[in-house]
Amino acid sequence: MNILDKITNEWQQQWAVLWFLCGAMALFTGFWLATERAGLDIFMLCVAIVGLVCVVALAFRRNLTGNGLGITANIGEVMAQGRSGATGLMLAPIFYLATHVYGLFYWRKNQDGDGNMLPRQATAGVWIITAVFIALGLAVFPWLNEQLQQYSFIESSSDTAISALGVDISWYTINVIAFVLGVTAQTTMILRYSFSWSIWVLVNFVWLSVNLANSNYIFAIQTMVYQVNAVVGWYGWWRSSQSFKN
Image (cartoon, rainbow, N blue to C red; front, side, top):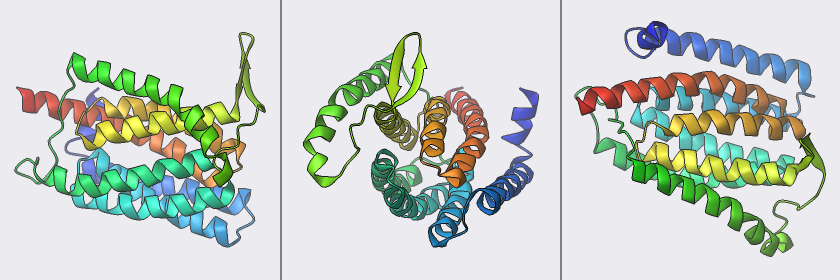
């Protein structure tokens, strides 16, 4: 954990610059080699780069940069995912945008002397509520989506994405899981719970499969870069919450 201690403390600026440059290079490589470099591809690349700055700022608990750029990135993600047909990933950024607006004010009221947001640890009750929230979301969303089919929401297809132990999981199911877990991770993060980043680690695995299925290679690369940041964010928030508790 010594390296993570360095990254989340004295090496913050150096790590952020290095991580951003590597992420931007990976995104541009994917853009150049795996897309037709059309207008939508260029737009997705720009949104992804803004997203890089946003998530690293959130990992290091920067309010204005993290939540402010989060609003900008979410608007772009809604437009890009909607155009590519990934409705499950289009709905989540709409919710994220609203939470970032709330976070701008909420985080500002909970800052340390350096202006960084103060994270907190979750009690057993919060863990239980979060688990119930996820279970209800997974149960209710398919019914809600069925009611909204007339508005061209997620197509309830049965196309198999993954087969394991005799169970077939459709791309529709994965879209639902991505949406519910993403909303949960975002909500707990804006509420300053350090365990939110562990949910983001799981979300990134799910989103990667959806982006690959929809040939959104730029966002697929972005998701893998985000995964590294999620691990750093989890450790940094957990360590800060421990220090604040002590």
